[in-house]
Every structure is written in C-alpha cells, then in structure tokens.
Image (cartoon, rainbow, N blue to C red; front, side, top):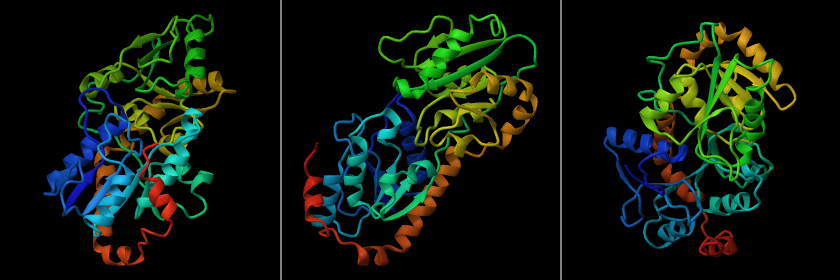
Length: 341
C-alpha cells in the first residue's frame, strides 16, 4: 500500500500531530508500506488529510490538491480525513467552516474523540463514513521506568505541558494553582511545573516554567513529578494527558472536551467550581490512583494499529466506496476548495 500523508515531520517539540505522524509513518513502513508526503506519484492507494490549513508550516498539500488528484490523476485513491481541531478549542470562528469544507474530499472521516464527533457541526451527515480513533503516546519514550510515586511526604509535585500557549489550554486553572502555591493552606504541600509556551504577556509568580521539551527530555521531566494536571477547555483529542499518564502519573483533569473520554478511571476530574476540593480528593486517593496507571490504554501502538486496520478495511472495500463517490455532487464546494483561504 502506498500512503500519502499531508504533513511533514518536524524535528523538536512540534506538538501532538507531529508525534502522531512520526509514529504512523514508522508503523506503516514497519509492515512494508510506502509513505510519501506529496501527490506526485500516480499510484497512491490512500491519502491521509491531516490539516486543511494551507499556511501551516507542516502541511504539504491541501484538500483542493486532493480533489484535483482524484479528478485528473488517480480516481482510485481513497481519502481519510483525520479531524483533531474545532473552533470550540480556542474560541475562534474559522476552523469549523474550514474543516467542514475540506471534508468534502473525504471517503472516511476519523475523529480523535467522541466529543469532537458529537459537535453540532457534524450532526447532519456531512461527515460521510466516520469512526473515532483516540490518540496515543509512544510508550517506548513515555513510560514509568525510573518514576517514583509520591510517598505522602513533602510536596506533591504537579506538572502539565502544552505546545500551544492559548489561554484556553487551561490557564485560568494554572494561574489559580500558581496563586495557591503562596497561600497558607497549600504552601509547602504542592508544587507546580508548566512545560511549554505561555500566552503572550503571561508569567508565573510561584510555579516553575520550563521551555518546550520533546521526546526523552520531556518524559524525564514528567517522571520527576507525581501528578499530571490538564485544565484544557474543549480539548478535541489531546496527547499531552497520554504522555503524562503513561509515565505513571495519576491524572487531575478538567471535565471538558475529550478529557473524560481519555482520562476516566485514571484520575480525578474537576471544573472551575470545585478544583481545590478535587485536588484534595486526589491527594487522599493517591495510592489507589497510582496503582491503576499501568493499565492506561492510550498508546501510539494501539492508535497506529487502529489506523492500519482502518486503511486495510477501506482498501478491501475500495470498489464499493468508489461506486458511491460523487466528486461533482456540489460544484460550488469543489471549486471553493481550490481557493486557499
């Protein structure tokens, strides 16, 4: 099978999408498949659309290019659109229309979380054939080897990490946690480290801030803590909580977006009204939560296996899929995808 992926791998800390493509490319090549990142070859079997934003530095081809390829070069190629974004994530107004428009070229839509699939945007059948494949982290890097759980003595060390510095990554809670470090009730009982980029003009007063890390350096930093916290709002399908959990850290997670789907059973949930009470609950249940972490399921190996199984199923059903494909069903959307806006 020859697979074209519309995303080039970047070196260094480039976020969860970059790590996903790295793992998927390795899994495809390990079983003998061919991977490319362009539409130059005339014999591509399957195209994976990762991101419709043509100005993104990692994007190598657009939905418009996919449609031209299907119409004029290779009508037998199948198209999978992986959706891991939404306007709800960052309180924007342009991503949902872009995703919906780009989905016109897809034979199969893959959502990275059920919460994302259930958004009103996708409830009128626009998503064509669809499935949910949750993200996973690389266990060869993010694992508990060398991690030591909290023994109940000294400060409980919390950590989180985000590539993006958008406020909705949870900075209302991270700011509150920063303030708690100086309050008599919590001073000396907890510590907090934030790894990654910050919103413009924002800084911590009491927490430790570490520049973005990737790979083993990131895993080592995570393993030097006791609890992983994620306060992200409307997270569509993050990978950060997977990396923390696979390192052995019990999760303190916001009841928002995909996080309950990924984290339930492996930590304590909270919202903006009960954060301190839920943190206290985690402290009280820490030992039992830590004991559950080896069963955390969201690994890159599992995610890639699910994608490979999907690709194989689509290829087996190719003739049936092509028989129902109607690329000219909406000439306006076909044309609109050719305009890179």
